[in-house]
Length: 191
Image (tube, rainbow, N blue to C red; front, side, top):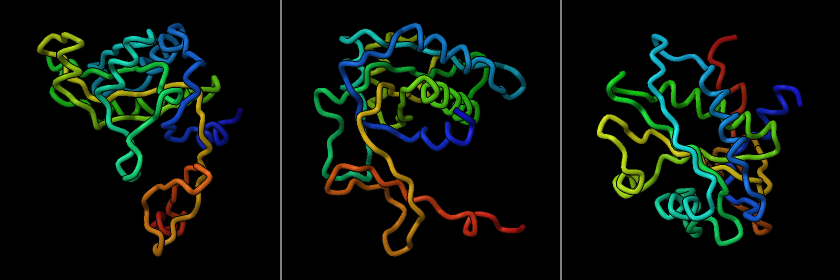
């Protein structure tokens, strides 16, 4: 798959084929890719918590909130839940903030997952204290982002942004997930 195709298939998937487990070895491989990404001042302040065990996946799932724009959807139902997670942690003993490198790392992980036929979504809405308590994290570690992963069970379609419809993603009556994207003419300020 060329890079353009990889970017195109790398959507934010929120429904998965739950009986297709993501292997722990793939989670390790994805973190291996992430560790090679740029890091401000090369401090490499991010750490990773890997979850592939079914019971642990359920524990993480109970602490996440999915898809704020989909008001009538409370998240993946049984049979559609993620089968693996990479929880990105920031080590505050190394530096105080992590947003830039967390984004680079998360995108790299998702592109790597897409190349292997898996997909995922970055989750920033989670029960921080409950998750932190379950993980029993040292005080210096901050939960920055959760990446939910699995074999996608939904179709995601990119469409041009229409100001009458708005920018919010939505699902049609067939369950197809539509993602409006602004056109290049709207994004490029100067050619």
